[in-house]
Length: 382
Image (tube, rainbow, N blue to C red; front, top):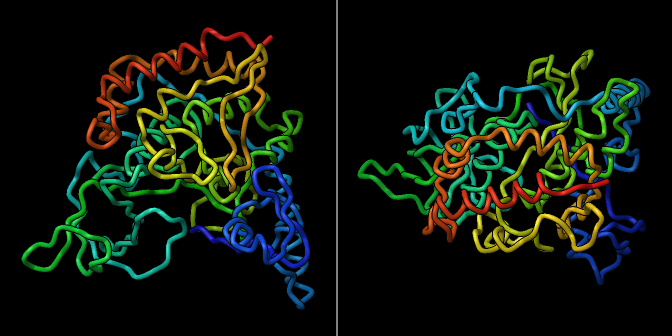
């Protein structure tokens, strides 16, 4: 079960906004309010929950912080997979899986969900699910494609299932198609299931800059894997990459339990909805989420001989213009080259990319995917 804690109060300290320090004064209160809970440096004491007056709880908090920091050093970002065998249309074969465009009936649950895109919680026989909706919501399409690609290549991501949802008791503000019994139909819709694994109490995610703390000598991911993940984020144009969009999970322990040992820590991209567009400062859904024109016209690399990924900063972001090593480029090139043309086509068909939804046909998306893949394969980062 996920447990989130808010970021630290503004107080008199400054906040980082797209690489610039902004003082906490009335003149920037709007920006600060928006990003105070987002830009959290993994493992930083400034972002940890407020200490309790009870000595025992202080000790527990310290132990948890130390345990998490040690797990982060040992974390992986990739695991070996059979890329050629990945069934992109079906997706991850895991408990709680939904079939492509399966009809799901559920009861509305009035609970807050983080983020700004259209979504609600819905109960299917005691299983409370997060449902993202909206024909004009780029995340409904982009997040399916991004998570299926990450999964097929061996990187960590949540599981997104394109479905049709009939919600009993859903408020009118969600604009579903009303049936005679008052239930609302939502199509398109996607159901999200988190990648399984225990999380540390009060964990607020990790910033991309914290990847420098991963130590291969301690058993953590090698730089080639870390740089490959950064380059894949550039490929996707993953713009909303604030700290709470990434999680540290202990894949050897159940989702509902606090980790005891965390023998297999793994770094997961938790929310990749604003992808397959172009990174924007304000994380504009219309441009940054499943926008063919924006994605097709954004190059993979910055101009010049250096291997700097073309990823513009956003005001919430913790990754922009990353420098990519040759080992990282080569590692991702080998992985992504293993995808077949039917798999790439299935990626966009399953995500329901079409001219109506994204501004480009499936054939257009496949063509640009291949062109961007070649930009990875044909580059040298010596």
